[in-house]
Length: 136
Image 1 (cartoon, rainbow, N blue to C red):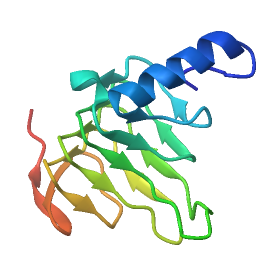
Image 2: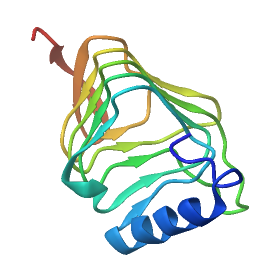
Image 3: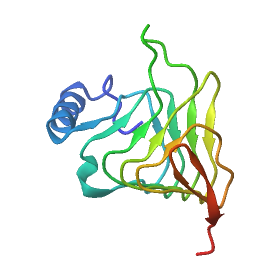
Image 4: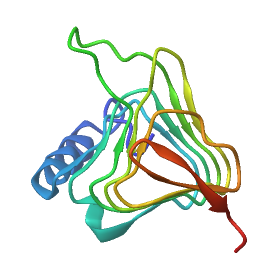
């Protein structure tokens, strides 16, 4: 978790309000690894509940991870592997089961991911598909 709102209610409440003001929506239920980088203050970024983010992940602005159904339920967990990069405007949609973005994967700007992405691959487009391997 970024902040456990139950253990630090005043700080948690303040950070959540600042996040809303900046356009960054992140529930207390997500799990985050070490050295998460959220570029450009996370403007327009939405992380739904049931998101698990690994170590050394970089998330740019206007990224959406997960989704909610109209009945308010969240269909599955979303796992972002260690060292993954989610570029500006990327959308990671969870289907009826869990969604996995592999370690070191790169999701291109404005891509819509509807399938699992294997480790070390670069995906782009709408719907996103593999465009290359990550060689750097």
